[in-house]
Length: 542
Image 1 (cartoon, rainbow, N blue to C red):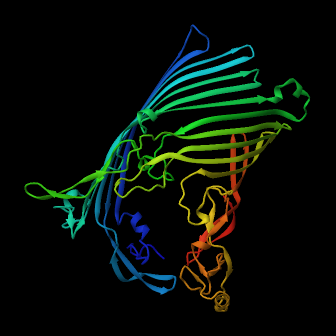
Image 2: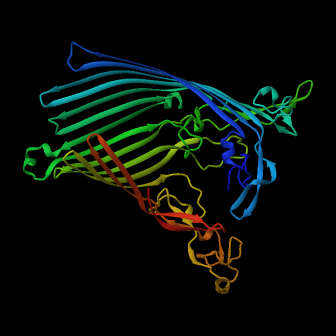
Image 3: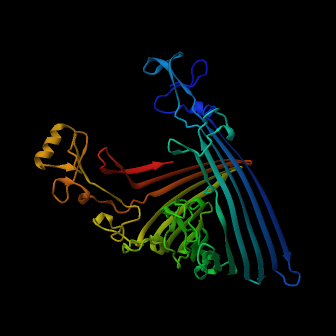
């Protein structure tokens, strides 16, 4: 369907808005501007009195300021004469109507600043075949910002993008608010972290490598006695190909075994644990009392209605870091002069997951219970890669293959189980398992429906009688009614196997790269018009 008439007027699409007209500004505009200033200072000092000793100071400060103005108003659609089902007369207008855009004016303004200070002392030196590298770091981060979002609806006298022309008075028309002011846009008091970091690395003759690292992090998201977390990690590697006994091995240029284990922490406290890790989803200071709007009350010598407040969620005085214990084992090999390969196995234990527990409280207790650190999950997987590199004169090319598979499952999480399929723990069930009804066959005709009802009198799907074109589901409890009692686990583990192909060619400084990714071995589920779920095998390529 055309977007504009022969004279350039916007066409009425009937079922959707005219996006081309909106892009031309017929419905108003959404303009924004921003400025960002950055100060970055670094100073390095090398001690003359001790070889390998140095110190570094780094400081970065960022200032951001943004403004956004949104002006919206309806405009006129024009309806064309339809010549044929897909042909329209651009010169003949048969009707017109206003769009559904609400006239409004909105202004958003936000300001923020971020600062980070790093103090670091390094020591790196070799003693014969011994090499050491050590560092101590102090890190401080601080962030604060504020903002306001103001909106007003309606232009009773004259429609223009100026505040004076918008609705005045109390800001209520026909019991509908026409004004709104909010400081939730970009609003966040000062937050920050402090960290003390240490690292020590040692290797002998480039054959034996060991590293130990720790972080001691403090976050304002937690109470003082739960604020600090200690997160150590260690890794080791053995370059077998540098051993004397390996010199007689033919066809293998390099062979390395490595392993690591480490503990990390997450101080993000989200409103929605499955949501984005950003400030709009953050819910800080859960260890303190906070308040929300409550019931209004009438009191005073001249009785009047006064707004009230009440306590919100009960504070959690023990809220603390979510933790991840990561283990990794790998092998790296180079062979036949052109091939490199890597194989890795990883395992992660996530514990102290912040989540709401399923608990009941007496009716006399009026406050919701807080989220607590109690959940536990495990995950593991393998990563494989194989690469081939070669050249023909100045023409170089690389071919790489990689494969990945991972799985995760719950170890500890509160459940309210009525049916077996609701149990997400144990039995080989992954976090992404699929549940639903099991399809028995498709009802292709009324004869199929009649046969089904003859064999299973009163058969229904959640109270709906079957019709041609629908699925007939398996009735596991034999009551001729398909409901929650017939939902089962359709696929315990729905993890995709991911494959990748990477190609790169280069010649005299010019290069071309192509990457292909695909997945297979998993299932996608969908629902039919009656709400039943079925599944299908899937393979996809990107």
